[in-house]
Picture (cartoon, rainbow, N blue to C red):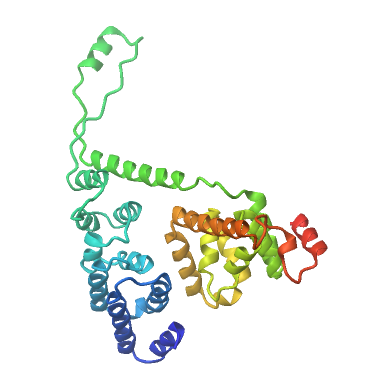
Length: 336
């Protein structure tokens, strides 16, 4: 029985069934010593649609259980952390699924209650710890007075120089902390925007070949973009799930909307309802760029290994596409 079957059973019956399924699924997952990525994705697919239909007590139970889980599903953890702090505190304090940027974003959205729980984390980034202290106990800061204008009459200049300082303003340190949080998030975004693979022309080729509905056209364009052989590119799009293709597009550093357009063109049946789109976006946001690049490096190593063994040429080109007219393939790629 698939995860979608479980969801339909829960939706058709009373809310108590959904709650029991929600708890049982997480409990079973936490008992796994080293869950696979497929099992992590299955848990997310099962629990996220049930989230809004389960009571607070179940969310609190799941948050406590996942806080001790080394391989907790990041999308579910992030969704739980949007709950009030009395529900998600164990995750804020212990979960390894939350990175520095996640913690900063949570502090920015939820303020001191979440920040105080985050401050209890072991090995917390010192900068985040200092910012939490500044938010909790804002220091009093003097506002610097403007310099007296040179051509003002002597008496007026002396009066301006002798004027008392402006009253101390509380909260200035908190505002400084918020600015530093924003600058850290901006710096993180700039660091992850480096893209060694893709340009606008590459994206356009991927988009246009995906929209043709001809798998071999898109697979050839994907092989060219990633510098892998055609057979490897074909294997990425022949799985029943789009997870492998997701990693390829993340390595190319495509934006969420561009990646979604390509994936929905290749896997149209995977998105029958808005919840499927939300799950896609959660997965794409949580897939780290460096992890995706590691996958591509592994694919390229396999390509090179096969080339050394003489099983297939290294270059990805139209000659490798089976059952495809070479002239039409080249014309389509040139037109895109």
